[in-house]
Length: 120
Image (tube, rainbow, N blue to C red):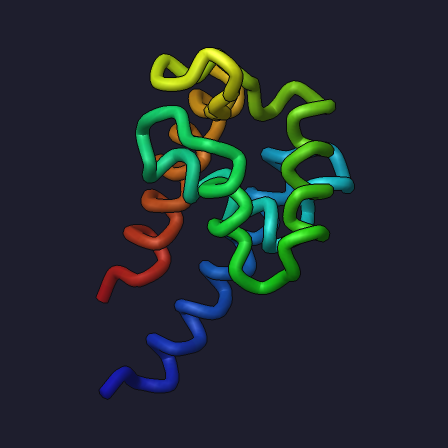
């Protein structure tokens, strides 16, 4: 079981990570945790996915709201649509290059925060 000091260090580090996430996004429209689920779900997929699959990454909101969130991210250029190679009528989505790069830089920063914050 963790000590009280270790728990406190974790909470302080978590707060630093949250602050870094907000700073990374810079646009208050994307502070919502559901965008985090969407962006990290797409990053973990590591390939273009259908919109239906992408909205499923946002587990804590309804389907209609998730579609609105997805479309907002597309409108802002954080997520891009590309042709579906399996169906000429359909489209797939993926992270924009800049968002993917930014996410990976954020992940590296967050990992360093936790490594430093949770050292014995």
